[in-house]
Length: 75
Picture 1 (cartoon, rainbow, N blue to C red):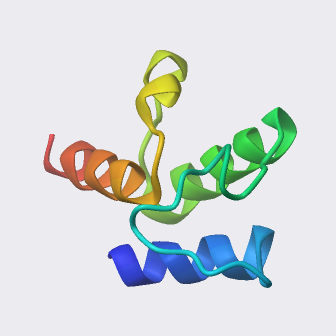
Picture 2 (tube, helix red, strand yellow; picture 1 turned 60 degrees about the horizontal axis):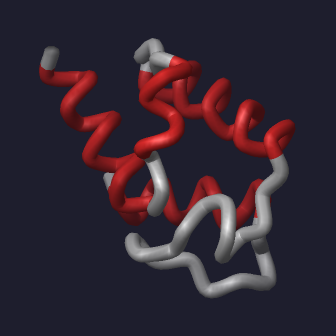
């Protein structure tokens, strides 16, 4: 799932940036709040999950997002 998530983020938001699991969404990719909301919507649609607005602040890196999605799919 991590590779799929990296490709989605890279293709949509940062084609010129090397994206890894340790890439910080806000600081490394310079995503603004609108782009982060767009990303959250894409993730909710793609993985059929609901992402709690309060949880967003803890999703710092691509790896954090991947772990969050995996945990949501298990619950």
